[in-house]
Amino acid sequence: MEHLDAISALVTGGASGLGEATARALHGRGAHVIIADRNTDRGAALAAELGARAEFCATDVCSEDQVLAAIARAEAARPLRVAVNCAGIGGIARTLDRDGSPHPLEGFRRVLEVNLVGTFNVLRLAAAAMAKHEPVAGGSERGVVINTASVAAFDGQIGQAAYASSKAAIAGMTLPVAR
Image 1 (cartoon, rainbow, N blue to C red):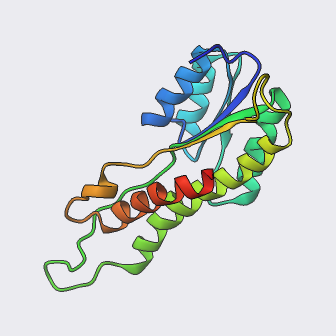
Image 2: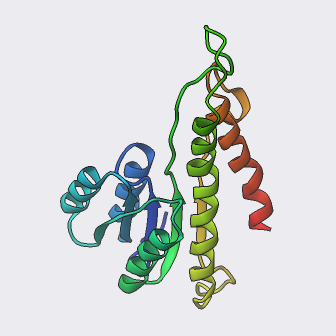
């Protein structure tokens, strides 16, 4: 990865796990990083630890207004050229519980809303912001959006119907939106 001194990057789910590692890596290479997450304590602590060129922005990826606010913060610092979708939730529920109760539909919907719809929401809004910039020197690219999924998309475990479905949908969505 080249030095990223002239860009900003938005990392959803940036306060922990893969998102945190991504935020650290981008920051370490010079990018101005927006840590977009719902976890205000961890997000603010990470931004403070990283120091200059790192900001925390409380963000629910399902909220258009909150995602636009995070993008605006990124754009205020430097042109947004990178968005990495790491935000996601899990949850384990069997299709039928041992007592015969069905998987709660609301829980299934919530996982799809956050993981799939949230990813698409960030992708579409970040792409719109990036499209307004001049292409990177010597090419036609204006930025990159990276979606993360999981091996569960192809080999989900017992109780992962919602999670595996959401990750499979992200994998299936990514190529068509890139075309």
